[in-house]
Image (cartoon, rainbow, N blue to C red; front, side, top):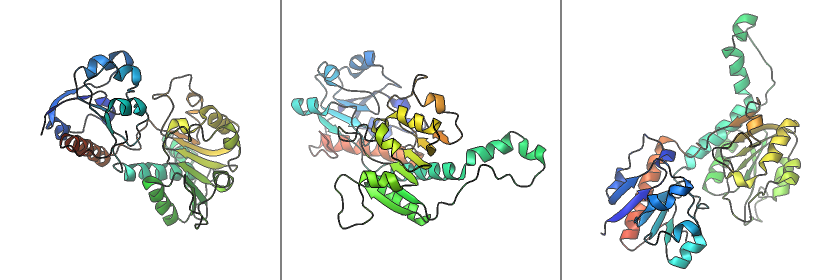
Length: 319
């Protein structure tokens, strides 16, 4: 087995509590906590294996790094990599599939329950001291509703979407879903517009592609069922974020839960910054994928991708 020069460009996004030993055992490893656009070429240097989570590797960068033979992503999505250029130059790109399913499902369902039960507002009533001072055993505002009998719409019916559907059904919801290739024999597989009209809870679990970019534009967001809870744990680019913020401010959405953004972290100029303190908004810092178990599995899967490439039998190839 050949030993490779391996570089990780944004280790900080993986957390400081995860061991990189499975990767370090495969070659000479350099690790950078983060890498700015200006630092990418220098940090890659002569590395033959480049591992990334969020750092962009486009044509301009890769053309200046001729030694790169393998690019590995610590993620299922690979939109940060110029796949077309990699195919032209014979650079293998490998992703990781299925490592974070349970983690994302947990956060998705947690968001739905939190927003549906308005737990943040009830917690604040206790934390503020009002519960103690007011002297009433019960405080029941805002009103909240059971999930049983609600319609949970799922956009993207892959590993994560199907698992969310299982949990939603266990909570008593009726599940409707949409996917790229519809199942014409399943009455619960519906068009996206029908899903938007009927879903009390709608969660996104699809990749970002040219077809799905801004799939939820202002028009489609305006067509969501009044009072719906909207959850995006897919990719920020799936949505018109300004239109979602407007829908919250205008009271058309019952709740908004988001873990992914077009800019990460999003700046103060981002439309979500102005709604971040709204009681029916739950914004998290792109953490849904990252339970300890999921991150450990991710590291080991990336190591297996490198091993397979070294042995001439690459796996999880997306280039």
